[in-house]
Image (cartoon, rainbow over all chains, first blue to last red; front, side, top):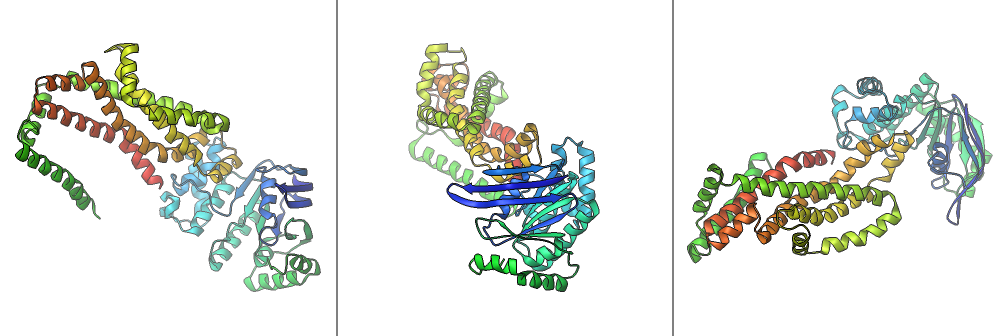
Length: 244
Length: 248
């Protein structure tokens, strides 16, 4: 099982967004796509999820079930946290009692309190809402999970806690992951493999294995080493000196 | 503001209206405005004696039937027009044209086509409210959040789940106020049609009261009509409004 980009290029109108992307994500891998803002990371994720079709080349997925966690939680405002987390299972035809029970177990594991389960999204904090969105993705038992800067809007401490949670959950289930970020420390903390994109039109300028950092200091040291790599430094220079 | 305070403020508007009515009666006499208490007593007499029953049933039947048909037509047309852009573009000017048609023109046409008592009242109500509800439903479909559609598609939600869990709640926030306005309109148009046709409902009783220059009875029938409109709004639309308010 794998996801493969083969010679993928895409333009929005006359503006090229991605150019000549070749990438394979294998089962169990945690691949982080790293690059400056606007380089086409989210577009790659949407191609991987099937929401977009490539202009040239092919995107093929051998994964049986993919789930997406977006930058904003995209929860349904008229449902409580429990029903939101169970939405994917409802789409799969899982019976109400069973899906609510499974959603409850996942939400509790992700740190929600019993009282939070009946809250609608407007009454959840940003971190809680993103946990519900993550629970909704995990609940369908995917073999591939796509995450588009899911913690970008959260404060640093909460972000680290949720990164640990994502890492623990993906290791626990063995699910393959494609995670988009422009935060280098986040990449070194989560990835088993880091793929660096250039500025728009995005193309892959570096692709290397990474041992996920377990502590904040270790993540920042790994991030500093990554930024000093010649291929990454060249990508930053090509982006007009804009760091990730 | 607490619930009790809100209720007091709501009541204060009605008190001011009643005082203005009493002032009008004092200033212009019973041939222009009957006494409020006399009107209320007449209304209670009409309802209590059972004399109002047949008229209320006739008007309610026609107004609510017309509203329900109009709602059904509006929704049935809005879905294809909302999901097929060319159809939506073709339907919008037609709906605008129909909204601009004065209800009295439909009443005249309906009386010619169906004759008095032939369902002309319900037809007029339906044809008047359908374009209003169609426009609101189309607006609700057009302004739904595409990010939620993408999320539902990503989770491979079947069409029925997308309709009930994603589309309908967003549609309701636009449709509920329009359905409320259309319901109020339904009562007015129905009574207007009955007055013109000298029909069996409240409109027919208003026509009789007018012929007898019976102002207390005229105002009493109007009071009954307003009470019916408020009751139907509470029973039919309050659950809908509660649901949309909770979603917000």
